[in-house]
Length: 341
Ligand SMILES: [Mg+2]
Image (cartoon, rainbow, N blue to C red; front, side):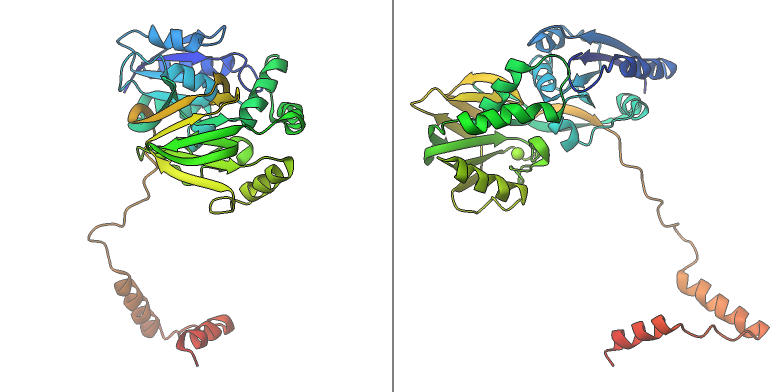
């Protein structure tokens, strides 16, 4: 089904210029009777402005960028039910990976044309929507350091020095965390709130998160020293942090985090000011398109049963006088082990 689509492209997201690829997708759509208008962002929050101005007859939005760009777009979508498709370009692309968005231009074009609509939850933090993970403390400081030195396209390697410097400079702040109105943590540490399980660097800190269950996943690491941080990090890399000492993990509908200190906040990999943070969930409020998985061939209805073919083969062997093939040694052993003899 031909669709009118708009692409919102962040030209500095990820490792390379995606504009030629998006033009290819536009050509593929036109061959099928569709249409793709390409809009390019030029500054922070520009994607929100472009999304807000999307005309009423546009049927799908292609977001070409990382999680920050997706976050900006969903904050500006002019109507509920207008679906998005994400073409991965960012360094992390947590949401696109979680939703298994296509990476090949031909698959992106097919998804725009023939994808089925599904919905996902979004978080609402201090009145702003987010789609992946919001971080309080350590990782927000890493994001701030990254943004200070960022010039154009970045890779994972570019995060090394911001993380290294934050590791030595960070002072773990005192946090007070309330979940669903109940105080669940008071002490020094860092906190993450999210919609999806994917996290930076291949970690799955919110590993129990589902993007369509109407719940936020909250993980608080009690931490006041670099040594404790290393301990938490190595358990998180081995996916053994949940249930370990000093880790609080909850699935909730609202979170409030405050601190007497000025504590940084990041949302979907972008700076988002300081605490306090009030976070809620908007259940299934954003739509995305996904191709139906290729159907596995169904067993033919009314076909010849297996036992019939087997009996026919034995009959043919008997008629032409061919003796049955003797069982192999491995088959004999398998039979022995199955019978327990
Ligand atoms: Mg959830």
